[in-house]
Length: 418
Image (tube, rainbow, N blue to C red):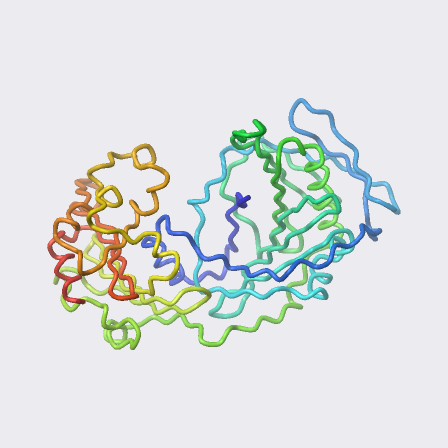
């Protein structure tokens, strides 16, 4: 099951990281994490500051008391779950480029999650910004002896979430820490008739933002609420994570370099795929050469007022094959077949290829490009043609995202690459 959150550190993000977002639209991002095999399951052991908990169930349900084993003291709290204001939206996530990750060692996990490590099986990885090796976040999978797995995220400063909690949010005092918890139920399963339950809680400790999430079948609602409350208690009792113990090792060969147009054209891998002639009213804005986890690309942008021409060059890759289409299969790319909103008119099985088709350069014609064109006459934006598609040259794909550039000029630019 997919996580429902959008977590980002508020400080330290280089603006150049965001430049390519407009070209990516609905394309799937590459996961930043490569997990090691989970550690062998361990028995639940005593926790130094283990606490009995009392927390509220969903509205209309009675509260439940939770007691961690071998608790040396009796301190309780009520964890109030607020109704989440909207459903999770995977499409809202930002794929931040130029980061690298490291799987944490057992000693690092013990230092960052001291109480949690004693009571649960924990695997974790830390994500770092490439440009200065600073911490972006830590993501952990926390498994209970009952088989429930909670995602725990720790970020610098604070957590920004991709949903609302309404107007009357009730927070909970957990050992002096303010915790905001929430829940929602998503779409009953067609086979079981039961909903999927999302439980979350977020808080801050010592300048670090914490987010916890537990997802499961509604039949496990009681056990899930109990588990999330225990995980929150273990995190708070362990104190703020000491990220200073992490020693990031930046991968060799990675790069994120701003280039001049001349430098971009001279790039030995992708320079020859830059068009020879650009509409003269469009001025060079920026170029970024990126090599990181799963990505090797050259991105170039030209601007004319609110108009834009973005040109991204990269290997086709395994995922690109699913978007490759013959020009004869017009249902895969002809936008005139699908009235807006596309969410209603484009079949789900065709959505990715209709939004992001890739054509072989030898099959490309002006008619094909015309079938991709949307004409916009919005007074608050650059009027004219909108185009978005890819063209394959051998094993290299050029993806175009343009606003205001006529179809015939885009076609001629693509032919000039050939």
